[in-house]
Image (cartoon, rainbow, N blue to C red; front, top):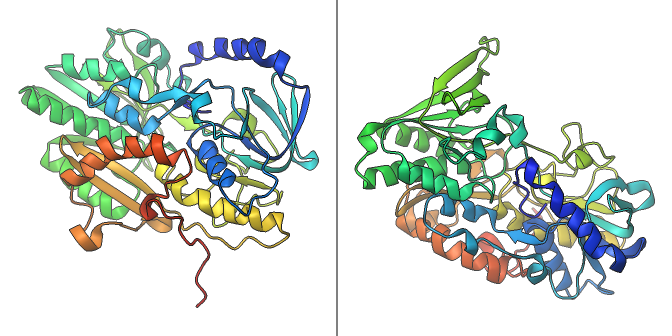
Length: 448
């Protein structure tokens, strides 16, 4: 949940250790007024903000998450680009859980919303008055044939910024690659931080230019999507950048197989009329963003919609059926970009509406779909993409600096220096609201 991108072969042992370490100190049954599933960015942030809210009386919050480490996942791009060390991108979970909030290091297996209960793999049942579901999503490395094996071989020249286990290899591969075909992939479907697949590409291109080897490297961006970015304004600017920098665009090409021995990547064509034809491409360097999906235990639950996400109202974050259940972050059905920045706008809306429901009132606070993608386009430059539902730009600095589709050095330092500091010192402590800075925004729709 907190830092979910881990390779399957490496994920099982910690679960057994957690069960042995904590089973004797955790009751077979427990009850809390508010139970939060997930100790990642969304879960910890909403817990911190709720704990600090004066209107929330009888404070009794519990977080369920088996992870012992909390990861700042937006920082993995910086690690893969050689701009930051991995040691700066994680902290012990115990130091991030808000003071006064109970942490159960347990793995949720089943939701029982009719009985206001959550069941865990360790056999512990936790009941609640109100439930917030925020376990993130699953980074599915097994979804691409041969990818797990390739990532475990440091000589394969295959890497990914989407796991703390593999991100440092990205920078090593960028440094060692001097000549040949470099391919950067983005899968079809929903992923967290949809700009990250090309952030690392632009940073690699910039590094190779610095190293004097750019002219010896052919770069391809192979994406399952039909365009560079989902928001038209930024997509157009990025496509112009792609053409200017001589990067090949393979659109609606979804990676399905990696053959590290023969250095071949296989893509399935998704364009209408292509009949799913397979295309093979040789590579010397391959950066892969794996497909992503809801956790099975979420998708198969009574809380999920047909696609497997927690089925909530896109404005209020309240569940469409169970009115004492809310969700935010990557696990929710909110039809926006799945980014940490989106949580800064979702959390205050959720809390206002949760408090309203506690008082027997209708939820009125409204989330407009705000999300942000600080899209690195090279050293000392970044395109700060900010938008809301419908792909409509919602730019913080446009009135001061002009349109944010133009990469700027100021934005680069926000991503590289300011945001990591803010994350650990203000974001997860419940005191950062994105575009509103340190001031809680008014999330109640204005009366016309």
